[in-house]
Length: 368
Ligand SMILES: NC(=O)c1ccc[n+]([C@@H]2O[C@H](COP(=O)([O-])OP(=O)(O)OC[C@H]3O[C@@H](n4cnc5c(N)ncnc54)[C@H](O)[C@@H]3O)[C@@H](O)[C@H]2O)c1
Ligand SMILES: O=C(O)C(=O)C[C@@H](O)[C@H](O)[C@H](O)COP(=O)(O)O
Ligand SMILES: [Zn+2]
Image 1 (cartoon, rainbow, N blue to C red):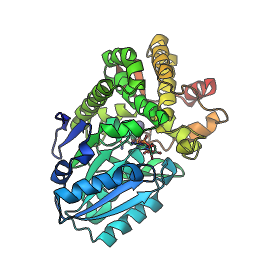
Image 2: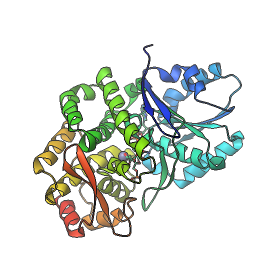
Image 3: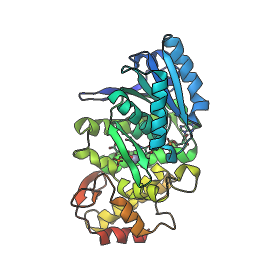
């Protein structure tokens, strides 16, 4: 096996992100990330049948004395709840997990956020190792330590910053990922180009076909470059007091859509997170242009790239602009002065903007 690519997240609680094929079968690598003798593997009903047994067997061989339990949730955003979080804590309790125990998050961002939050809270914080199996989780949710569950009133409203002890991304798992979920991950990849590096947008434009065809080299490059962008900003601003908020480009609109649709993305009749972010980025770029901050050509370029990647770029029919605006008031960037948006000066250069009038937001929402 070739050595995996490695991206380091520096800082007080630094960790490595390892990226490569076959890593879940490498029991020694998994075992090196564990400290104590208890591990709870959290997964979901799609991922567990595919990858859980293999990972458990590899782990048992490499660390024979390990006491392991599993906690599997049904798949879907609507499962990222306080109820599932509580069940996860009960699973840790039944395992008898001590403070040196590890929670292993085997799955996409839903599993990663839920498992990470349980790890953040059990005995005030135990290790979490992220084993992402979606493109979105590999490029974004497994990195940076944001953990959370949703409330019916808003996305990720209950959570904690709790950096993982390690991230081990087995890119072979992407072979079973549905096309729709692959495309959702590409939305967050495009985000990095949009906010940090227009040159990365050029690269994505020229590799769009290869990425959609799941070309191994193109995917590995997209994952490693995305992780490097995220690692850099997270190391500088782990608690989102400044620049890290750029990673929220498209999310004020996107989260409002997901919430308003009742987190129906994975059941097929709503947008999933990546899709909602794709729409949200186009709206944010259009708002930037409407405010005279950025050229309309940049917004059109972003929209074309997202469309080429098979992502939605318009608000789903039937969502009321006023209702979406009301949802945005619980966005975590909002403060006493009101809503705050991540907007553009141009492709590759984003900034936080306060004081955008409701009417300007509504005008963009009404355009759809
Ligand atoms: N913490 C963060 O920084 C952060 C960043 C981005 C997104 N998120 C969160 O991540 C979530 C979205 O993550 P996601 O897009 O991974 O969704 P997800 O976890 O719902 O996974 C998508 C679907 O793919 C299935 N799946 C996962 N891996 C598979 C595989 N290898 N083969 C076949 N099927 C597989 C899942 O069962 C699910 O049905 C949202 O809740 C979002 O808020 C968090
Ligand atoms: O890591 C971050 O910071 C992000 O904002 C990454 C986003 O892609 C992700 O969706 C995150 O969960 C959103 O966080 P929130 O604070 O807006 O809930
Ligand atoms: Zn996101």
